[in-house]
Length: 298
Image (cartoon, rainbow, N blue to C red; front, side, top):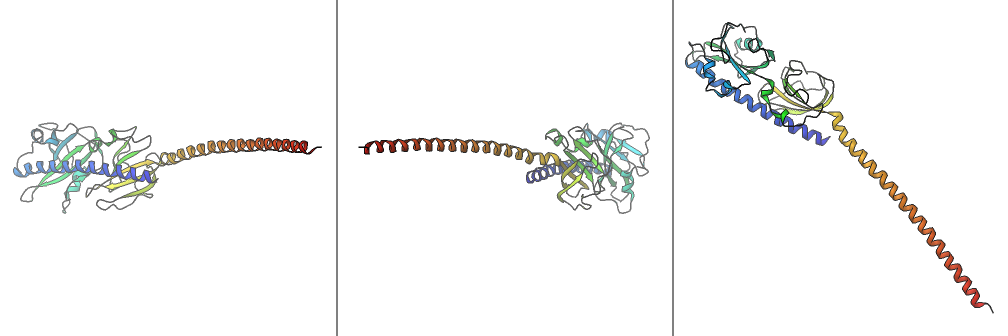
């Protein structure tokens, strides 16, 4: 079990580090777009053109967009002149309308994109002009697979999992051997049971719980992605963990059985040799007695 704890902890740390770096890149590229919007606040943001020289906007696995203050899409990397599309009802837009102005980026629940027609994770941030005027909400839509390359480089075994979960307990991405695209189970809740309810910045630890998706009992190692509202979790199948020491036990039992047979055989051999030697020595002694008797006979 100690080996399993170490393996799960190391994987969770690598998972959190990789996803955290990707989110750092997203935040940096969002700031570049926000600067251009603030530089000319009265001009419609041309994300389609900006994608040529802002690296992440030009990536094949991401779509960028801007929702105007009234909730209508005003710019996208997919079309230089997008058709009217209302997104004012989306959580990832409405969360930025409060008076407190949500700091940093918001990582929304997975949604089916109305423009892309794909299930994506919406990462958003509010953009304000220098004078404080609300310019809109910037969106980067990522596929779950964009957040990590680990499933392609490690063996998750039959029931191992890599999961990114929000502080709300909702799955943003879930990778398994049979579903390496990260889509199976996203949007479902994993809250409850022995899973912690509070995750401070950089928190890590372990818990044992039946999988919320498939009911498989697993050892889970987790680590929060710094200040980001995401938890990287690695789940190892308990039956596979216990199978290793059980296999060792079977091997040891087999070795013990063989050793026992060998010892018994050796003991039988020694007993037989002792008996043979004793019989031989007895015969020699009897022969000496006869010879002595012959010598003293007149």
